Image (cartoon, rainbow, N blue to C red; front, top):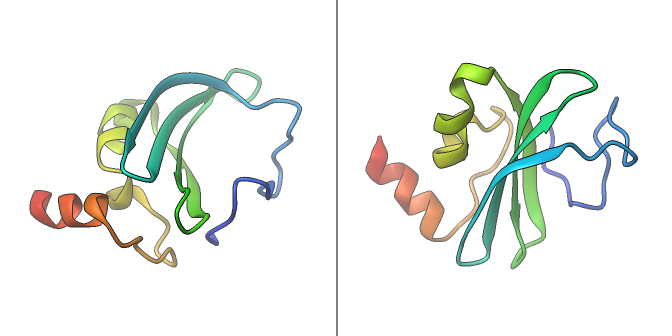
Length: 95
């Protein structure tokens, strides 16, 4: 999965069905959102850094939803580049 701006739509996803926001948090310029898509019964974590306009979306198992919300980089796609800043340091501290 590629890093994408929030204006890009991932393949197979539609802007008309954005998902229900279950949780949202912001640390510095990094926003993390936990979304549930009822139509497909899937859970997604979306991360966006407004300073760099980079981020990623990743589907997670429902049982992993809260862990992925609090530790999104641990669930990042393998080809995603970690964003600089406080959250990247936080992930290193959690490891």
